[in-house]
Length: 617
Ligand SMILES: Cc1cc2nc3c(=O)[nH]c(=O)nc-3n(C[C@H](O)[C@H](O)[C@H](O)COP(=O)(O)OP(=O)(O)OC[C@H]3O[C@@H](n4cnc5c(N)ncnc54)[C@H](O)[C@@H]3O)c2cc1C
Ligand SMILES: *[C@@H]1O[C@H](CO)[C@@H](O)[C@H](O)[C@H]1NC(C)=O
Ligand SMILES: *[C@@H]1O[C@H](CO)[C@@H](O)[C@H](O)[C@H]1NC(C)=O
Ligand SMILES: *[C@@H]1O[C@H](CO)[C@@H](O)[C@H](O)[C@H]1NC(C)=O
Ligand SMILES: *[C@@H]1O[C@H](CO)[C@@H](O)[C@H](O)[C@H]1NC(C)=O
Ligand SMILES: *[C@@H]1O[C@H](CO)[C@@H](O)[C@H](O)[C@H]1NC(C)=O
Ligand SMILES: *[C@@H]1O[C@H](CO)[C@@H](O)[C@H](O)[C@H]1NC(C)=O
Image 1 (tube, helix red, strand yellow):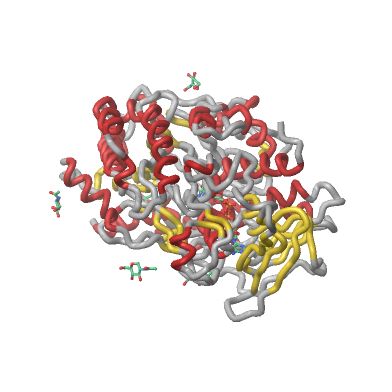
Image 2 (tube, helix red, strand yellow; image 1 turned 30 degrees about the vertical axis):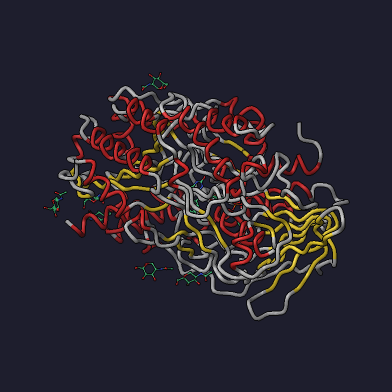
C-alpha cells in the first residue's frame, strides 16, 4: 500500500524524472552591455512582476531601466520548457530551496517552499495553471480601502498580459470545453491556451462534478471562476512550450538599448538618503556573493522591488525599513518605521487525499513504463501533443463552502464569533492587528457566499489536491541577519487558526463524496491517504496537521493598504515614508484570490507600469 500511495503522490506532486534531462551546468551570462552608473529605474528581481514592469517602462526609449536578478538565464532545458515536465526545475539550481520554519500548528514539521532563482523567477518552476480569481476576490481589495483595485480595474490588465488561443477543435469535441472570448486578451505577451491532450480520467471528474449538480463555468476568466472549469496554461499553442515571464517579457526586447539585465547578482540593500523633509532612494547595492565586493548603481527616478513575497520584505528590512523589533534583532539601523513589513504573510495550504485507481491510462504509465515514456516523448517531439503537452490540471473545481459542506451555516457562525487576532503570531504590531480585523470581517462576509470559492479541488488520476483559498491564518517574513545571503525566516502561519483546519476537514469529506459518485466508480477508487477510517473531527485534524503543505502561492508580506492598518504600500504601490520606492510583486496582494497567483501578479505588474508611467485610468 505504501508503494502505491507514494507512486500516486509522486504522479501529481512531482515530475516524471526519467524524462528530465540534466540541467544546464554552464556559467551565467550577464547582459554584454556595459552597465551605466545610473538608471531611471532599477528593478530588483527578474521574475513575473519584475520582467513585466521592466518591459513596459523600457517601451519609452528615453527611459533607462536595469533589472538585477539573483539567478541566471536558463538554457531551455526540458524541465523549464516542456509542459508535461512542469515543476521539474524544483530542487535544481534554479530553485532557492527555501523552507518554512518549523511550526507547532503543523505538528512540529517544516514545509519546503520552492521559489524560482532564474530569469523568469517562479514562472520557470511553476505548474502553468493560468487562471484568475472571481470578481469578489478582487473587489474585496477595494472594500479594504484600496481605491482603484477591483475586478473592473484589473480586468483590462489581465487582458493586456494575455495572448489567448482557443482550444483545439479536437479537444473541444472530446471534452466540450467552452470559453468566453470577450474575457481574454489576444494581443498580449503571454501565451495562454488549453493543452491539446488531457489525461483521460479528466472525463470522470468532469462527469462527477456534473453528477453532483455543481455548475461548470463557461470560462474562469470572466469573473465567475466558481464551480468546475477547464483551465488554460501559459503555453505557446504552436511550439507547445512554456511561456514564462522570460519568453513573454524579456526575450522579445533584448535589443532595446535602454533595458539592461544583470544576472547572478543579489541586491543587498536599497540605499536611501535622509533629508530634513524626507527619506529618498538614491541607489541600489548588490553583490555576486556573500564575500564579493558590494557594487552600487544610482537611481534617478525609482527603485522597484520585485523579488517576490519572501525576498522583498527581507530587502526592505535590510534597508532599515520595517518594524523596530525586527530591525534591532538584525542590528540594522532604522530608516523608516513601517510595522507592516513582512506581516500579513499568507499562502494557500495544500492537502492531498489519495485514492489508488484502476484505469487504462494515467500519469503513472509515464513514470513506470519506459517504453510508454519514450513513445510519449516521440509524440511530443513530432506531433506536439500527447502526455507531455499537458502540465496536468486541465480541469479544476473552485467550490464555495456552501457547496462542499453541509455545515457552512455553523462554520460561518463560529467564524463570526471568533477573535481571529488571538491566532496571530506573538508580537504582531498593533497596526497589523487592526488591519487583520478588517480582513477578518471581509473573509467572514464572503465565507458562505456563492460568489466566493473557499476550496480548490485539483484531480490527478485519483489524487485530490485540495487548496485552501482564503486562509484565516497569518504568518510573517523576517530577515534572519543583516546579510541578504542568509535565507529569511518565513512562516506561512499554516493552520494556526483552527477555522482553516475545519475548512479543510470538510474538504476531505467532500473529496469522498466526489469519489463515491457513479462517474468515478468505474475507476474503483480506494482511499489510501488518509484512509477511510479517518473520519472524526479529531482524526481529520491530526491528519491535516501532519500532512498539509504549500500550494506555492506565498503573498501579502508587503500589503497594499492603509498605513494605520499595517499597509506597506499605498494604492500607487509606493512604500510609505520613502520617496522613489515601489513594490510590484506578490507581496502587495492584501488577500489571496481563489486562484493560482501568476495571472494576478502579471495584472498587478501591468497596472503598476501604467501607474508609474502616469497613464493608469
Ligand atoms: C513550484 C511552484 C508552482 C507554482 N504553480 C503555479 C501555477 O501553476 N499557476 C500559477 O498561477 N502560479 C503558480 N505558482 C506561483 C507563481 O509562479 C508566483 O505567484 C509568481 O511567479 C510570483 O511572481 P513574483 O514576481 O512575485 O515572484 P517571482 O516570479 O518568484 O520572481 C522573483 C524574482 O526575484 C529574484 N530575487 C529574489 N531575491 C533577490 C535579490 N535579493 N536580488 C535580486 N533578485 C532577487 C528571484 O530570483 C526571482 O527571479 C507556483 C510557484 C511555484 C514556486
Ligand atoms: C537547491 O538544491 C539543489 C539540490 O541540493 C542544488 O543542486 C541547488 O544548487 C540548490 N539551489 C541553489 C540556488 O543553491
Ligand atoms: C526540516 O526538517 C527536517 C526533518 O526534521 C530536517 O532534516 C531539516 O533539516 C529541516 N530543514 C530546515 C531548513 O530546517
Ligand atoms: C457543453 O457545455 C455547455 C455549457 O456548459 C452545456 O450547455 C452543454 O449541455 C454541454 N454539452 C455536452 C454534450 O455536454
Ligand atoms: C498503463 O498502465 C496500466 C497499469 O499498469 C496498464 O494496465 C495499461 O495497459 C497501461 N497503458 C498503456 C497505454 O501502456
Ligand atoms: C508499456 O508501454 C508500452 C507502449 O505503450 C505498452 O505496449 C506496454 O503494454 C506497457 N506495459 C505495461 C506493463 O503497461
Ligand atoms: C486506520 O487504519 C490504519 C490501518 O489499519 C491504522 O494504522 C490507523 O491507526 C487507523 N486510524 C484511525 C484513526 O483509526
